Length: 184
Image (cartoon, rainbow, N blue to C red; front, side, top):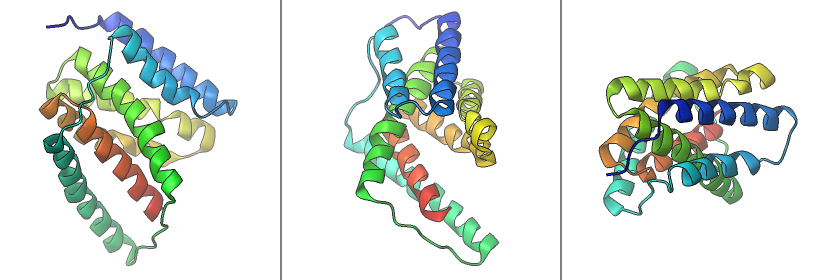
């Protein structure tokens, strides 16, 4: 069994990622730098990411997404009385999976959560870190919804812990982002 990365290294990586993410957003650097950074860090430090193609794990990701988003969409309908849907382009769906969900899940679940532990406490800590990592959107863009990332992150954490594979959390992450775009 491989030895976990030290907490000190994880904190340094996390703070570096947050700083890099904020600078890239603030100065509008290439949007491909951040995902590359989120993928390279675990690959270099941890020597890989926990991504396996598994039908069972993919089905778990799709089933979880279906259940959670059904309740989410029903709640939005009850609150608004209607739902206006914006259909995403194929490019948006591709970018969401490849440049958002996979890198963020590789970094937060496959690297941070894998190395800090897999109890409920660690899932909550990882989710808090995930939410804080999105706070630059509030600070720079005024997007207060960015703090809501804490709640789906808990689900992504449980999916990862159950399978030790980022595939189900990638599916949930990407489809949740796409649903959010479609509704808001």
